[in-house]
Image (cartoon, rainbow, N blue to C red):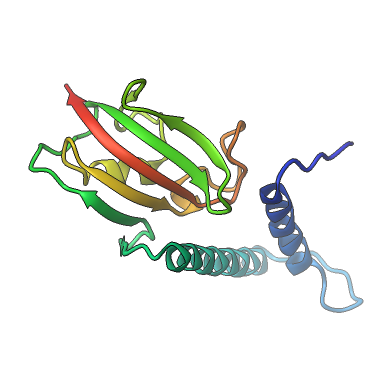
Length: 180
């Protein structure tokens, strides 16, 4: 099997998997099957370490760019750049946006402009849950910066295109229009 590394993010994903494998390795020379409770404890610890590592990466990104972002209980971060008095979008409405999404290392993944916007219906699985949650907080016409942690983005699998697994995403978004 040939493994090809295109980006630093691929190496980051592989290192997370290796961390998982190491934590599953026996601590002694005696080999034994892990019980379901031990397996759950190991997975919980791996998840805790991954979340802690990602939270640190997000905080460093915010500090580096001197953003002033609010953090939700889920880990979603939002900074309103311009807030209008327009209506808020709700599930199943179509939103029309200009946006840019990048990995925290600066790799641009996707974008759409005001001249060529992107449109989709909220709550129908077209975008990561965290991004849709953020959009529901933006009145029509508003602009914001959003950081979506990986568990609210594409998780450990990525989007099978430009976003590798295990990555938080940074969005700059302008909610241009809401349509029923």
